[in-house]
Amino acid sequence: MENGPLKVIIVGGGHRSLTYSEYALLRKDRMQIVGVAEPDDNRRKMIAEKFSIPEEHCFHDALALSRAPKFADAVINGTMDHIHVSTTIPLLEAGYDVLLEKPFAVNEQEARTLAEAARKTGRKVMVCFVLRYAGFYRNIKDVILSGKIGDIIDIHTSEYVSYHHMSTSYVRGKWNNSDKCHSTMLLAKCCHDIDIITWLMGSVKPQLVSSFGSNIQYRPENAPEGSGTYCLVDCPYVDTCNYSSKRLYLDHPDRWVVYVWDKLENIPNPTDEDRRELLKTSPYGRCIYKSDNNVVDHQSVSILFENGATGTHSMIGGAATGTRKISVTGTKGMIYGDFEEGKITVSIINPAPGCEKDDTEITVSEHENHGGGDLALVEDFISYCKGEETSVSCTSIEGSLLSHLTVFLADESRENGGAPLKVIT
Ligand SMILES: NC(=O)c1ccc[n+]([C@@H]2O[C@H](COP(=O)([O-])OP(=O)(O)OC[C@H]3O[C@@H](n4cnc5c(N)ncnc54)[C@H](O)[C@@H]3O)[C@@H](O)[C@H]2O)c1
Image 1 (cartoon, protein in one colour):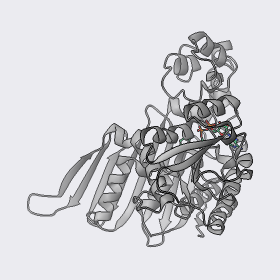
Image 2 (cartoon, rainbow, N blue to C red; image 1 turned 30 degrees about the horizontal axis):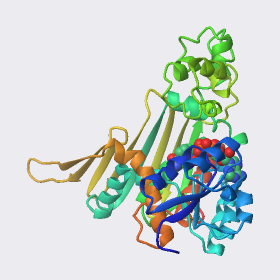
Image 3 (cartoon, protein in one colour; image 1 turned 120 degrees about the horizontal axis):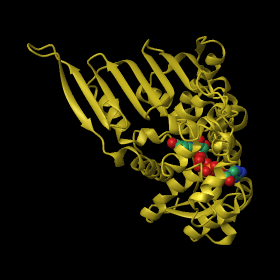
């Protein structure tokens, strides 16, 4: 690979790819966007203009790109979940390294096929587990690696998905029905958390998984009496329901609305009236109780590791606010933290007279936790492709296979009444 910036092509010019490609504007010496493959004419044109991409390097889709002579080092694949494998394999065969969005596959067979394709072609595939790059989890990993809390006995993580996020992304959003989007709630939302648990456990592998979960809130029988089907069309609860699309998206135009206004992205300055009209027919305007959702609204996962340690994760959807919490208990101490607060407490056992434990507080800034994580991930991808030293957060496809397999088994267990299932690596 030449010295100079890594030459990268955007495949799937949606929200995530654009976030990662911002790095090219900040660090021109490290990354250059030189091509795009995107079926949507407006998105493709917008990206070509933004990064001054010549016409001959603009393609309709991933397959068309893979058939053209290679002209870059790597691609950022930000397509939707169910086409990650089918779009990535031809690009690996064409000689590109790939930064691939999570989940990298939607079932076990796909996951193993892609891992095998990466092995066979000798290309690098890095998975976008951005949480590993958030300052919060990096600090926790560092404490564990320092040995301060001893050997891990148990990790518990919980994710509270706020009512506005739950309704927008899941119950009536892009990931509301696994028959259509091919991802379950656990795969779409919590593959990050299961990855964090397996990553923090280091080389100790999961052995058994079991899980319970269901949807008890967002069901037709829970709709208020006399409610309509579209909040802004025929519902008398439009000003009072917690999930009214008027209250969630018009009264709060900047909160969890990124997907809601996708259909307006070609209008230069959409007005409130444009938004109101859209919600009268868009999936995001549907009654939350009468959508075609089949995702769970809460789920718990238990993992037994090969050394007897345990890991548990709870996803609770529809919470008053969103956050992630974690506790890691070791033989010498424990770590407790709240992601949104950006606070971590490390407590080390100390039975000295007058003492119980020694506490250290770690504060993580908002920037280190969110936007900073996305850009740190891209920086690591560049180092990975160039053969430079990478961070402890870097994950190859092999390093992500285990957490994906654990998620697939957790869902299989949930569908089978919580039966424990063996993780075969
Ligand atoms: N890492 C994270 O924290 C995180 C957060 C949100 C979403 N995601 C994941 O990111 C991925 C993308 O999500 P998004 O919201 O950006 O999606 P998006 O729908 O905004 O973008 C996907 C783009 O892919 C394009 N596309 C479709 N078929 C294609 C093909 N054959 N070749 C090239 N392009 C094609 C679509 O036209 C679309 O523009 C999803 O897998 C999602 O689960 C990850």
